[in-house]
Image (tube, rainbow, N blue to C red; front, side, top):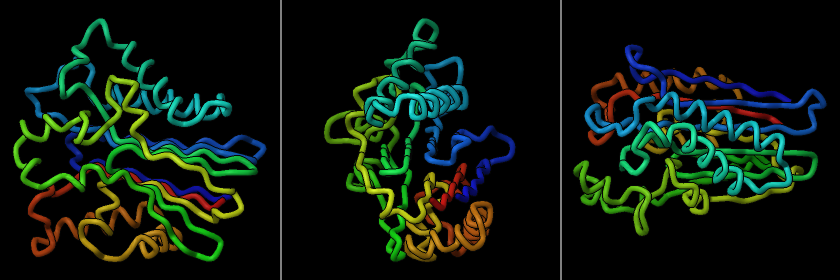
Length: 258
């Protein structure tokens, strides 16, 4: 088994709000990957005294622990419990009803000798590669399906956050876990997998440098740090910068060969 991972802040002057973990037992018979992309709030609209890195660390830690120790629980139930536990940790000090309470996108992958389970919530990406080399992207595309005009202002985007007809993130409401994209694949049908926050997946879905199979090939041949480096080079090219995206974003990538 090989696991390669990297993460980098979008701005070295600010903390990285992504969170990443890889857990493999000593037996090597299974494992868990968790990748979170914390949602950066406007500075005047936080609703929480702790901040996004505090939130992602606690949510990610709880997800990793439960995914490894409670293999009898499906991943959506694990996410619901992790959200509930994290919310309880600051319910008495923070406004959890605030639309900008700390929140994150989620990718969780868990595998054993028989199957590979996955969960994706919001706009991070999971890639699954078959033994024949075919790559499947598992995405929650609710945000992409919304009209661009509906997301043009902060107020209109917030009105669609964690609501019917909008898009969902892991925040303070455990019921959001029921909106996640989940599934299971026989272990024998997964040769490799990768998880990318949108700061890293933009190599494909924003800049169009290659399809998902080519993105996975970069991860396999050059590593997660190299993929992020390629993204940073594209972001620094004034002729390639997308108009609707912030120039640099926290970027996280993990590649695992099973």
